[in-house]
Each structure stands twice: as structure tokens, then as C-alpha cells.
Length: 272
Image 1 (cartoon, helix red, strand yellow):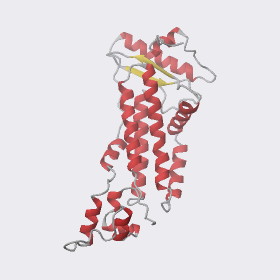
Image 2 (image 1 turned 45 degrees about the vertical axis):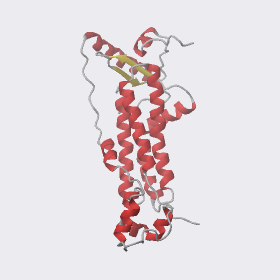
Image 3 (image 1 turned 30 degrees about the horizontal axis):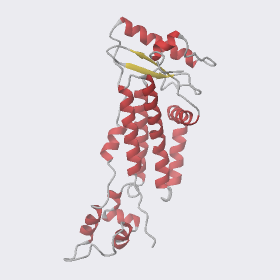
Image 4 (image 1 turned 45 degrees about the horizontal axis):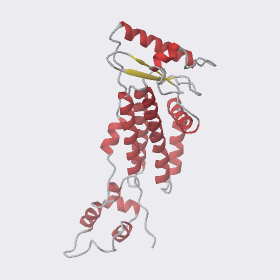
């Protein structure tokens, strides 16, 4: 029997929170190999946000036109395009090129440098974890914009309200059947008014946590603490210089270079 398909961005919210989780781990990670693993996981989670958004909303009227405008904005954003390229490279070709240094007080900072695509000015010589947090915020703003444009198609909590059901042209019986319940099951015992019946049905679904999405969207770039010693100043200068060298047209620094090995944290003992 045909059932109306209710749409929701719950899975999109989950993947955004997953990306945020890995961005937080990046900020605390000191081991360069593990940092690479965490970054790959972040890129996969972040990339799937827009995939899932399109999949869930594919049959919603007017979504295709709305998404086309968002796609153009993302394509025109050099930082967003850079992250897309990194994800494609990490999934299909190999290891993302990073340089890192210990900047004092046990704090490591990694930077993007030396990849196939040049680092855009907005991300140049910035801490990778900070860049990842900023990318999550950008994605969260897109999801919130979608929820604003399609309020009843993006959240079951909003759909299962009198105004939501009217907008979606749902009857109570249609809704009961869609949720896998017998038609008319909420009209038992003492008669319930329609709003009460809708409230009973809403208890069977999960709504999107828009407060959590807003917290992600409101994230602001935090300045890195200043170097706390002469050695930290030198490390920062070497790191900046190496990024500049790696980003010069046609220039790539081999990771066998002793200076590069020092900045990257040394050669793994179990490498071959």
C-alpha cells in the first residue's frame, strides 16, 4: 500500500555533528599519522552533508531550483571548492599534504600546503583544525537556510503540527498510515480533537535539533595563541616559510628534506 514519504534532515544533522566531532579531534591531535586519519574522516563526513541533503530533498517541489543556487554559491567559494578537492584526492588518489610544527606548550599546528590545488588565500597559513571548524559552520548555514526555505519538509517535528499538515496536505489518517499505524488509531476512547491527535503522533518521531545546528553555524574563528618562546617563534617562521615554498608555482619540497622532517614531527619508526 502506498504511503506518503515524509522528509527530514535528521541524517544531515547527524553527519554535520560527525564532521564537528572529527574537527575537534584534529585540534587535539599531535601525532601526524593519526592527524591524517582524522582529517580523512572529517573530509568524508563533511562531503556527505550535501549528498544527504540532496538525496533527502530530491522529491520536494522547488528544491532542485533552490539547491542549484546554493551549488553556484559553493562553486564560487574558493575555500569550499578546496575542501571538495581534498576529499576527492584523499578518497581516490592518496595522502593529503600537510606541514606541522610544535609551537610551544605542547601545541601542534598543521597547515595545508603542497597539494595538487593551491591553498586559497582564505585558508593560507591557517591552522587546519580551525579551517575545518569554519567549513562545518558554512555547511550548517546551508542546512539552516534549507530548513528556512522548506520548514515542513526538513523536520518531522514541524511537519506534525496543524499548520505543517495543512501545508503538506496531509490528513490525520494519511499520517497514521505513513507512521505504520492503523488508520484512525488515535480516535479511540474519548474523542480527541485534531490538534491533540497530532500531538500524540508527534511523539513517535524525532525532530531536527535546530539549536545544535545554530551553534555549529555561529562558530567563529579563534585566533591562535602567540608563540611563548624564542623556539616557538622560530618554529612559526619555519612553518610559514615552508608553506610559502610549497605553494609557489611548480615548487614542491620533498619530505626527505631534514627541515621538512623536523616540521612534520619526524619520520615514523615503522615506515618503509
